Image (cartoon, rainbow, N blue to C red; front, side, top):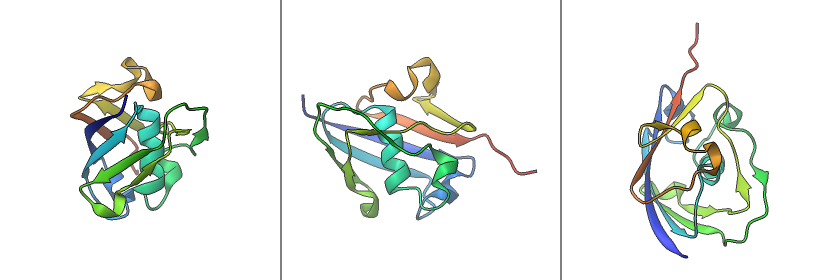
Length: 129
C-alpha cells in the first residue's frame, strides 16, 4: 500500500554537528510503502550525515525487499532523494533513538515501522572528557 508519511527528525546532544548543514531538525515526507527505523537510519547516514558517518550508524546492509524504493522530500531540499528499500542500518552504541519519546528498543529497534506524524529523535550520549 502506497502512502505518504511525514516524519520529523531531531538531532540532539551534538549530533547536529555531524549533519552537512548543522541542522537540528528535519521534516521528511516519505512516499511509498512501509518504512522502518532501519531504513530511515540508512537514509540519514547516506544523505544527511556529512562527516564521521560511523559515529552515527553502522554501514547499511543489504536486505531482500519486496517494496519499491521510496521518494523522500525534505524541508531542506539538499536532503531530498530516494530511500533504498533494500538498505537498513542500526544506530551506533552511544546514540539514543526515540520515537515519540519512547526508546526504540521497546518498539523493536530497527524493525519498527514508522507511522505518519511521528517524531524520531537521535541523541548522542557520548561526551568528551
